[in-house]
Length: 120
Length: 289
Image (tube, rainbow over all chains, first blue to last red):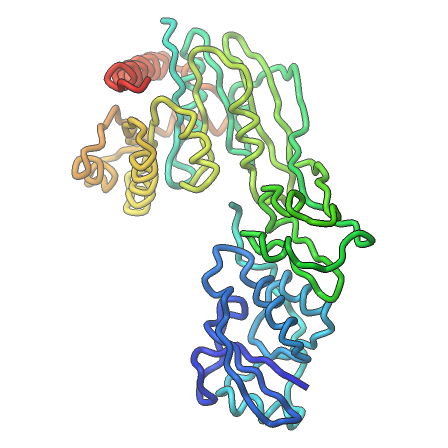
């Protein structure tokens, strides 16, 4: 399976980005191949709907799980439709977060926020 | 007077006295239209107490998909400038509150799988009171943008003199009211926060090429950051309205100060004359008008 984590930088030592939709990069980890890749998030600079665009991008990458600090309602709806599980991020580096995931230490993300978009 | 002018009353922030100034200006004019564009919390009716003579629903179009016709080609998802669409498998997800009703997705869908559906957004009310033509927009609770309601208000028939009570802020809603104005009256409080928001409103009207002046509201003894801003940025100070508990009480009881207090009747009459003179002067000196 493939898990995704929003990252500040293209490094396994990077911190997890506090924002989901506007994270600069995503780390994708393949649990079978035990490989990680970093992909630029084109939605980071979107004027609006960044969460939707980012969720679409990750769904297209066929990820199975997303580990994030927080998630907007719209992005959550897209990920749910794609049967992607959402897990609560720990305050650790990307590498340690992946290790925690593999050890089954992460819990599911229960709360989603209504988004930060404000009018037009 | 017969002056033909549309005056937008605005401020960067809420609570500076836009409605106080707007309703009293409309009330001292012989024959004016007052338009309440504060669609999230319209309150001009509290002061003008109009008899409502007409009301209609303002709608905006939103795309609806026919999943039987959609083949998941993704043209609409890739084209949407607002990221209001997502495609998961063959299931098209539409996010109405992100959608700006531009119509592009419906237009470009190669399969004709999208159509637009009109959704109610709010209402426009028309009323009368003495010499005042009253217009007010009210957005439905839970909606996020009232731009179509403001556009509908701006299309309404009005008298020669129009006073627009703008929404607070300096975003899309305010650009709609400013865009329709001949002259902008900025209302500012004597605080650092007030001066900051005055600057935002002033930058907006300057950017839009609209003549403007500031009314310093709630002035008191001591330094007024809004006054300092105006002087430093060449913004004309058209008047000052000193803080007055009596005026605050009249307003909190829903009274029009110009009807209750001779001093304020004279004050707003003179303010209106000064504003219409400025607006006339601005349109005379603008060769494009």
